[in-house]
Length: 73
Image (cartoon, rainbow, N blue to C red):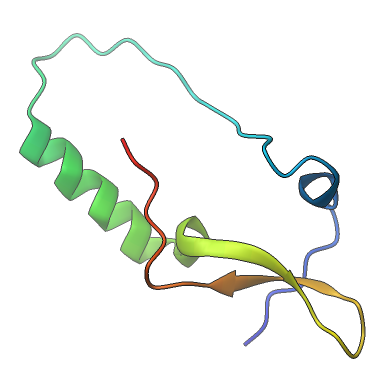
């Protein structure tokens, strides 16, 4: 199923635009638990491994899932 995009055209005009969230968590850091949490998010939300693509026939934008995408943390 294709998920078309209506509101995110800004990404095409500014492809290096990124959004970050910052938080202070009063706990010790465990790299393994952090990686496990990120893997769980990625598997639950496929848009985290998607690019924005355009259908040649219609020109519509959509999220195109890519197995190999990985944002470094």
